[in-house]
Length: 199
Image (tube, rainbow, N blue to C red; front, side, top):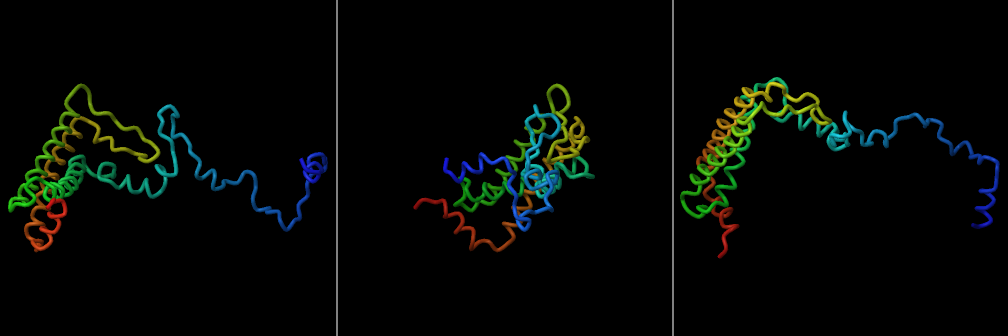
């Protein structure tokens, strides 16, 4: 330890700072940035779901709570219809562009049939989730979703969600098929299809 450090450690006088360097606006009980970003348990620390800046932030909560699965004020059938439409619409493109018939004139129709087949498989999985034993598990409130829909997690609610998912999924795939078939994409489609072709 240097003589300079030793003089401070052995000194019994408290260190006085010049008043111009002291910020009196900050008090020990103020909520600072560290407390705002601190990780806190939601209700039961054994559950393992912690309130972090990511899962309990404003943007994340607004985004998740506006998804059709968690949005307030809509029926389970409409929740399934909206979710299925997004799935069917988004599944059509990969099946059309990267499917085994992508270089034939049947690529558009094959993509439609494959997307509808995938929607049928997902619908069968939703039916199987509702089939055995007791009713579906009710999601408890957590850091992201304060009020999960209670009407969805019943046998009839899940059955309505499943039927809406099937109809929305098939409708979304057909809508994507109609867009691709009616728009003038015949100049773009060969370029996109040949990206994955080895020649």
